[in-house]
Length: 172
Image (cartoon, rainbow, N blue to C red; front, side, top):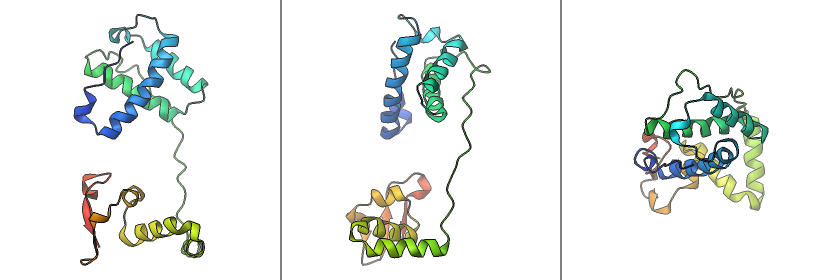
């Protein structure tokens, strides 16, 4: 089974393409077990193959979000090659509601920062947390921060890469 993904390099970031290639390995591995040896893109006319794929991945202990992302990848490839014929039939798996944590209370935040400040092995976490709190930077922005982006004289940080275009900014 050949699932060409070269077209994704034009529309997606390098990180997205890398993740999709990793997902594609899992897709190919399972399809090799459940689909005919001579499977072609045009053979995805039957929803049963997709549903079998979903059931097998869940049975392997993979979460519904991952299975849905793999399904989206297959759909994207098939659409690119004008072979997607399952509109109205394909159903992503239901995903559990997000269990996002709650924010720390001011007292909990003070206790956490005081604890981090008192432990030398927590120095990086402490300083990263303080930088996030004082600037509004995202964790990924702090982790990817480069010294050349910090202007000490102007007391500014120039963020050149962010999750969104609006995240590219200068922050005091």
